[in-house]
Amino acid sequence: MEASAIFGFILLLLGAACGGSFGLPSKFVKKETPWETLWGPFFFFVTILLPVTLFPLIAKGLFATAAEAGWGVIAMPVLFGFLWGLGSMSLGLSFAFIGLSLAYAINYGAQIACGGMGPFLIHHPEQLATAHGAVIMAGVAVCIVGVVVCGRAGVLKSKSQAGAGGSATTGGVTVVKGMTLAFLSGILCACYSIAFSYGGGVMEHSMKAHGNPGWAAAFVVSALILWGGAFSACSYCAYKLTKNNSWSSLAAPGIGRVLFIAFIMSLLHDGATVLFGVGASKLGTLGIAVGYAAFMSFAIIVGNVNGFLTQEWKGASKQSVAWIGGGIAVLIVGVCLLAAGNFMQGEYAKKHIAQAAKQG
Image (tube, rainbow, N blue to C red):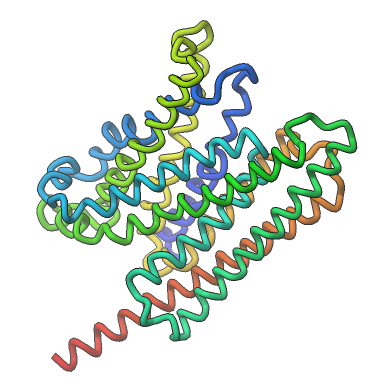
């Protein structure tokens, strides 16, 4: 493996560690802190502050591209970004209900399945009967099985912890609510992938008009998606602040620590995006197959390790731990199948483009 590919793979793993850890700092906020006091600033940093200050340093002419491309080109990335924002907000809520480990597993499982299938069905439904279509469908099915297995682990965990004197937050109703939120958030978070699939026109304009390489132009699309998410996620947090009369908490003693934690979370969240984009670009064709599989698999593992380190599974039965371990393993198999299917789809497209060129 070339040195650049090794460096790219290291960046992917670092990005996955960031993606699987962005919820971890929330564990260090005082329990009496309102949910919206932490997550409101987090979403502001993620969807507005960092894309406005950091992304223009990566993609030249970012704001100009967004303005010049036209509403017809940027509408779909922004619209699906709005839906992604709803999903990301729901994931934040599910952390509070069922913890990092279970929320990450269920969210990522649903997100991988829907994110892998959505763009394929929207843009290439005629390829469903091909070999790579079958592999992608198999990957989606395996991921769904993985989500079900993880859900079973959550139910067993709830029962065993309740029997061992667990807190009320491990109650059955709360766990089911949290798992439902995590699953729905995964479906909505998959809209990031769908939004990106509509970003070809934006990337093309960024590359032609402002001379950005493909990987840098991708950050213009990412910025549009995040700005779309700002409308939904930040609006919901503003609603919660108003409904709970908790605006004053943003000026209460100790808010500096909360804002610092929110900022660290946002750096980890957006750092995952940056590191994946740069890392995958250095892997060449492996960026589609090996890169995606490594990133998502390691992110799932890191998210669950963080959950175990913060003692979310303390008092849980060995059976429930075995089920979550099995669920993670199944999800990783599903990720690898989807990555293989996406790689095969890329090769399929290259073959047909070459044939068309010969006939032309």
